[in-house]
Image (cartoon, rainbow, N blue to C red; front, side):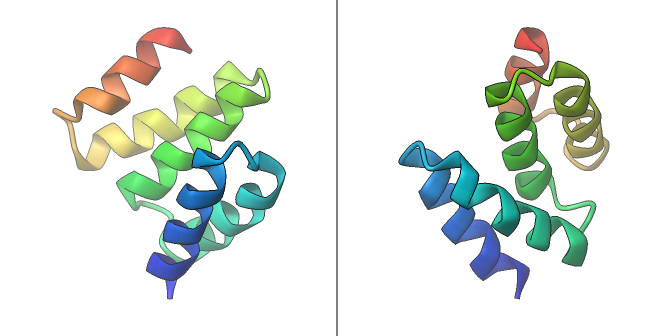
Length: 79
């Protein structure tokens, strides 16, 4: 279930446990590649790693599904 992977990944990322969160975000992304929340989480991890190009790719995918998402636009402005 991608929702379980996603929620656990979000909790780990919120605690700064990015290395543990990443595989869970990737599993959720493999199950549901167009999910906006999952793409947002992967984008945040990419920014943490200093990979703005990867972050932009996931943020654009997120905005394809939710064009008015303020949180995605805010992150895109920092990438």
